[in-house]
Image 1 (cartoon, rainbow, N blue to C red):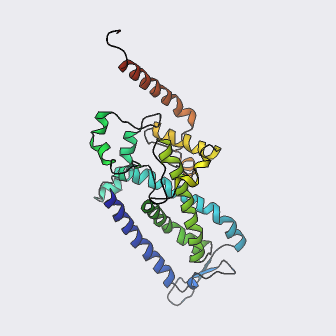
Image 2 (image 1 turned 90 degrees about the horizontal axis):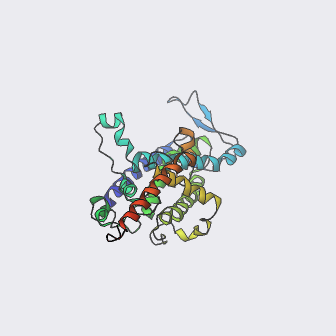
Image 3 (image 1 turned 180 degrees about the vertical axis):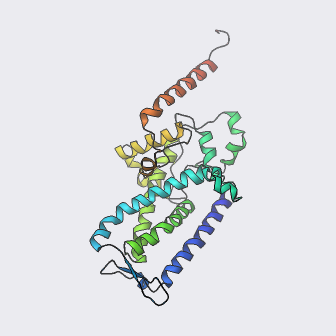
Length: 289
C-alpha cells in the first residue's frame, strides 16, 4: 500500500512539475508577478497576433479566491474518494477498454469492510484473521487518517486545477497561489484527522505522523463537525454508495450523490437492532435456554 502511494505521488509530481514549467516558460504570464490588472495575454499564433485577453478585475478575483478554492477542494475530495479510494474508476468502460490497471483504493475498501453500522470496527476472530483485516494491521489508524504523505498527494492533485485557474483566470502570481493553497490543504487535513479516526474509535494523529488531530479536536461538538460526522456516517451505512464528500460538502449535492439522513437512518436502525439481537442471542446461557 505504501509503495502504491509513493508511485502515485511520483507520477502526480511529474505531471505538476511539467505543468508549472510550461506556465513559467510562457511569455504571456510574466513570471507570475503580482499584477495591477487581471489581464493575461495569450498569443493565438506564432507571430503574436490575435491575442486573447482573459482575467477578472482584481476585486472580483480576490472575492472569488476563497470560494473557488473550497469548490476545487470539494471536487478533488469527491473524485479521490469515489474514483480512487472506492476504486470506481476500475468499473468505467473506457478505463477497462484501455487496459488500465485495476485500482485497489489504498486500503479504503478494506476500511469499509471493517466498519460496522454504529461506526465501530470489527474485532471478532474471524475478521481479524481475514486478508482484508491483516492488510490494515501495519497502520495504527487502519486507513482512516491522513499522513503527511497523503496530504502531499492531495496537494499535488489540487495543483493540477489550482495553478491554471488561479494564475491564468484569476490572475494571481504563482507564489500567491501557493500561499492560498497550502494553508487550505492543511485545514482540510486537520479537519479530516480530527474527525475520521476518532469517529471509528481510533487514536488521534500526532504531528509526527500527519496534521495533528488535537488542533481541531475541540470542534468535534460543533454543529459543523456534527454534520460532517452524520454525513460520513451515512456514507458507511450506504455501503460507500453516496455522500463521498467528507470535509468539504458540496459536490455530492451538485452531482446528485448526496443522501439525506432521513433516507439512510432507518436502514441503520434496522441494522443496529439486528446486531443487538445477535449479540443478545450469543450471550444467552445455554442452561437457561
